[in-house]
Image (tube, rainbow, N blue to C red; front, side, top):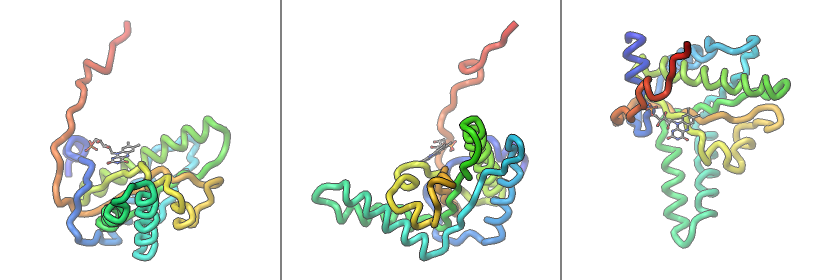
Length: 185
Ligand SMILES: Cc1cc2nc3c(=O)[nH]c(=O)nc-3n(C[C@H](O)[C@H](O)[C@H](O)COP(=O)(O)O)c2cc1C
């Protein structure tokens, strides 16, 4: 795939076919993340590729949190939340190794984001879609325990949901360059 086709055609994918993502393909995409720019070569990214038991545990924990916050329809909310996570064919948790002073932590977060962009583009070039999920799931109680992470050492930056797209959404509109740039003398 041409670089420009990947850059402009890449979309966040939320609806996946049930097909599994081949392990070798996933490894190639994650390896693209290792080549992201990172200041002082801190290489702050860490990846946890979820096997079926961990995937299920995460889905149950997320569903329990959602159900606890729901009203009388708690069981329906639980089932929907569980299915939301279980319907993702492949889940990778990306975390940032926490080290150094605040300026390094800020730069390391940026580097992890660069890695995620590389990963998404590399997967896209092989026909696999991805969603970066940063919402309630990564902050849900139990997530760190399920992932065997010490929050003092690593911070979860996102769950990456991978799969073959069942639907590719239309590109959301972007502001034009003129709206967000200015030329200085
Ligand atoms: C830091 C970050 C966090 C994100 N978290 C979520 C999320 O929690 N849920 C979600 O659906 N998309 C999430 N996204 C994806 C954006 O919603 C998506 O990029 C945006 O809608 C534009 O769509 P596109 O990626 O197809 O261009 C996140 C993106 C970034 C950069």
